[in-house]
Amino acid sequence: MRRLVPHQTRGMAALTMVMVLFLIMAMVAAYTNRNLVFEQRTAANSYRSERALSAADSAVDWALSMLNGGQVGTDCELDSNAASSYRDTLLAVDGDGRLTPRMGPANLILYSGCINVDGILTCGCPTTAQPAVTVASAVDPPGSAFRVNFFQPGAQSRAGAIGLNVQGCGTPGLDGGACVSSAVPQVDGLARVIVTLGMVRALPSAPAAALTAADSVNAAGQELRIGNPDALTGFTVHTGNGINAATTRYAVPAGSAGTGVIDNDPNLRERVLTNLAQVGTTADTMFIATFGMDGPSYSRQQAVVRKTCDTPCDMTDLDFMLAMFPGRTFWFDGDLNINAATGHPSGTIGTVGKPALVITTGTLTVQAANPMFGLFYASAINWNAAGATVRGAVISASNFNATANTTITYDPTVINTLVTAYGNFVRTPGSWNRPSF
Image (cartoon, rainbow, N blue to C red; front, top):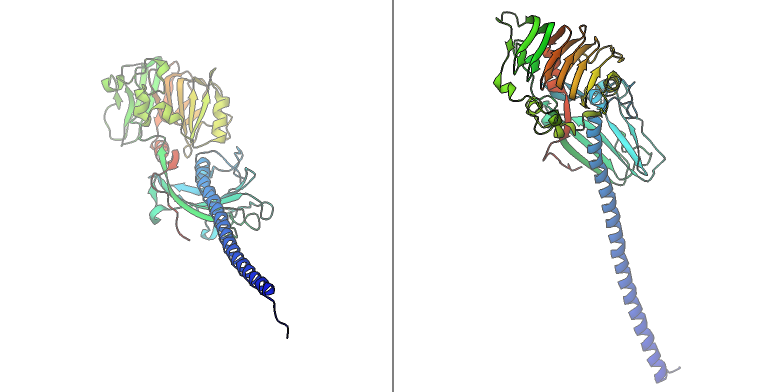
């Protein structure tokens, strides 16, 4: 039997120690690698979660811009030939301003959504006849996606308020559109957010008279035909100073006595805009009294369609707004001349169901015999067309001057639509909530 010499014994001991140390190092390396893999997975999950939450938050802003925008097609792009706006397609409003989501056939929820690939949005908007949106891209592309739908907050309709339910996805999904579909999405990051949207009314309260002029009504040699059949308001003309007209025909609610005229009102006279450079500014008290906020703040609202008129704007500009943005507020910085018959398909400036809300910081001049429905506000108004008519109300921050017979009839239905259904949607503070799955 062979015996180990001392130097060989020492070699075996060294080898044993090396193997033990190697095993310990391997165990340490494996443990360290396990932590590294765990941290990598945690970071990846956090990244996907943040992408999904960012997609959901961006969807809220997207929905607000759509609600405050104009006519859109099924691709959610502006289209003057579209049947309706995003707001009118997805939301219904009653006479008291209560909002409810519209539903598709068989009471299906109407979803709209977008896929974002390389910063390019591809969107789909439903209709009540076609509730399923068709939005897709390449299978499992890089990017994100979101889907939105509306609901009644607190399970009941509220005046000027609607709930928004958002689903954001870190990727568009395995089929390139899973996040947008109504099915459970197959994505690697999902976030749901609900917020309440509130509507800042375009016209906080109804004007009391068919014709309001902070200064005077001048219709020398002409006839004023002003009517107000509304028993809740009942006033025909309200002025800060006098009324000068050859003849007048005032029509007041049935059973009412008098003409419904309030003239030489000192409170209204204090709001006369004597400096046209202050039109629509914080110094324009007539504007603030009518619309509830100063002009600069009002005009910056997303639902206000604004046009700068370096030279007087005309019916071409107004027709474009009527066709592309019905149901929104039209703001003209400068003068507006209604100088031709409207080319809008309805043949009128506004309708009873979709009246016009026109604000002119300069002078509004009526030169063509158009039937007009809505509220027309200007710093000064010149009425030069005998055949023109207004159903709604007219307000001048200074004088109302007429060189032709004038016909204005207060229409409570038109005014109520402007008060309850027109406005700018915003996030309601404190309503943001991220529900659990």
